[in-house]
Image (cartoon, rainbow, N blue to C red):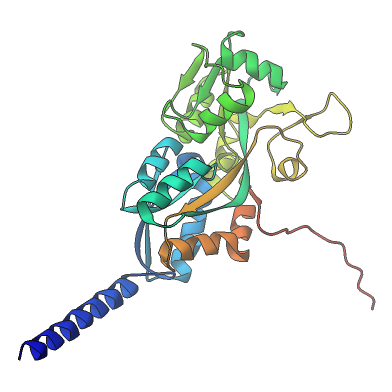
Length: 302
């Protein structure tokens, strides 16, 4: 009798686990279910376009996106509720080992696009050409010129400027932090003698009516060219200058996904990495990292 009871119990336990696994599979799959993701706010315009197309293609998917600083995105990755973040760097070795010790697997990460930190000024600002040395002097406070950035809490833009332009030095007192990229643009509209730093997809999309309107009050400044054939050339942020390595304020866009199964996080990162997602990045003024879409001339004979 005891053996029969034990056998029935094992069957019921296995059936319940199978039911639970089936429910999880239905709730969370590459093209359906619900997931929370965190995205560095500076990439918002490009990711909003991606989410719009993904939701249209897979109506059973619900991706709840939270835009915040890069530092906060990494904090969210530590939580069970967030399995995917989109930021400007991948995981370093000690971070990968930490997650492996907690999860018993390594989170996947990969490069999906390149972005520029666009330098913007008021439309009436006579100063619109800057060398890297000029930017270093302004950001360090050596040159008293107002600089506006998108936050104080370690956004990818702030981190990039400190690491790549200031080489680890602190910002000067003339650097003003506002709440997000949109606020940087609005502040530059009101401030004739200032420079602002935002992601390129906030100011270069010729399909976005709001951005077209903004460019009546702001303009993209020129920065000393990095890989031009001759010295003395300057370039503004664009897909072309990013692609040819000419615009110096360039940074990557990475995904980091904390899944070891084919879940919705993996489905969305695959979408970003394949042709449709890469085309959307191109339309959003980023440079696709996974696929090349170079134009080629063709000759057609009658």
